[in-house]
Amino acid sequence: MVHGFLYDPTPLRRFRGDVAAIRPRTACSIKRASAFALLAIACLLPLFQAKAQDSDFARPERHFSVERPADLSAADALVVYDKVRDRMVAGYRLSHDPTAGTFVEWRRYNSAPYRSATHGQRFVNNYANMTAKAYGRYEEAGPMPVGSILAKDSFAVTQRGDVFTGPLFLMEKMSPGFRPDAHDWRYTMIMPDGSLFGVTNGEGSERVEFCITCHEAVDEDQHQMFFVPDEYRVEFLNLR
Image 1 (cartoon, one colour):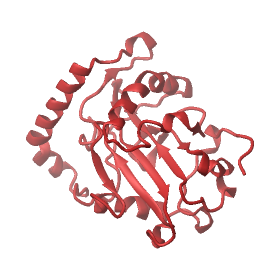
Image 2: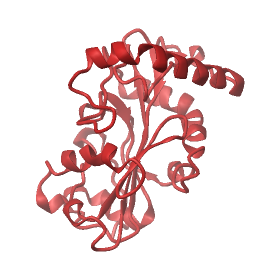
Image 3: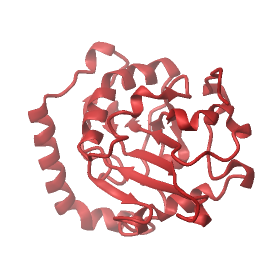
Image 4: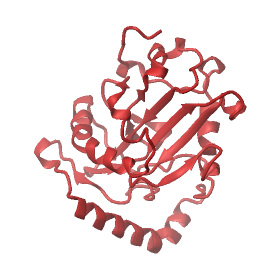
């Protein structure tokens, strides 16, 4: 079961350590899954709210967490991601956000998807556009220039082997004064079906306020940026 099925309503496929077992679904089956998810949300929302009293859909305090997440090797995480990435991007692209369909063409700063406790135990990847290429200097990156975009897509795998797509998380550096207490970052969360969960200073802003609160935990000289865990970091040249 996944806490917060608004994020991951139904598994795309089953992973049992066998590459051949992961097969893309057709567009029709995805539509049927979406319809089922909406029905499930309507029917099970009261039960879910009772089990997650510390979560508020209107103003969440954290990412909804995956229950019983799988422990995957880097190789297995890559296998799963390679199989579901195109489907993930197709869903994000429905948001019509210009970044949602192009971020996978940017540099990826992690060698394999890694499980992120701060993102509800989902497996995530770290991408950055060329304006934000200094991100690859990690703790030495300094403040990002205006126009920098950091993108983090996500998916979940349970111990049973179910694979769920997760949200796309975006951070875009805006002009000075946009949101001084957030180092002028605009946080956006796009759901797997392309719907907008929230964007700083825009629609659903209150629903991504916790992103700012979470990122305030980093050292001031990191300018609200979390970085890839050491063991997954990729080094690039020409980062200045």
